[in-house]
Image 1 (cartoon, helix red, strand yellow):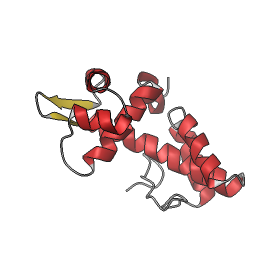
Image 2 (cartoon, helix red, strand yellow; image 1 turned 120 degrees about the horizontal axis):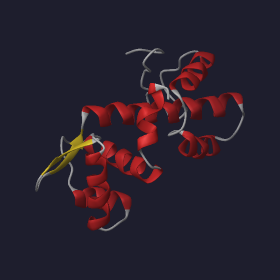
Image 3 (tube, rainbow, N blue to C red; image 1 turned 30 degrees about the vertical axis):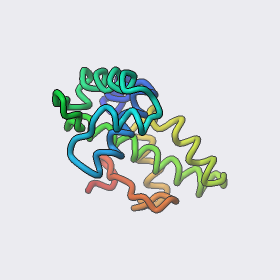
Image 4 (spheres, one colour; image 1 turned 45 degrees about the horizontal axis):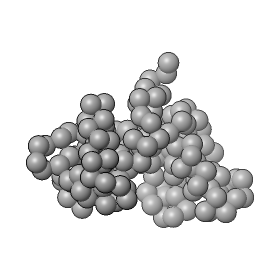
Length: 148
């Protein structure tokens, strides 16, 4: 199995949604609590805690008792890969497939977890290595393409 698929195979789509929620919340501070994640996801604190524990066991989060969680190095690497996949695919679909931005974003959300680095790098190259997606959000660099 190629190394680029190592992390995505270990995460479910739901776990990925929780990882993205932690990433969004963490941009405002270093550690976020289960209640904040629960509110962001629209679930109970118990449900959020269960998913945060799963992500901790998979090495995506570091947990601090009574304080909350933060992304681990592995988690940060994985969330950047997922964001890159989403934004490159969204840009590709919007520009080359002439679909609406809303449709491109929805489709990117469905496939972001399953795209290989090789495919994303190829799309990025065909796009001319864009720095931002159509929503004007920055596109993280890849391992071999658009290194930062």
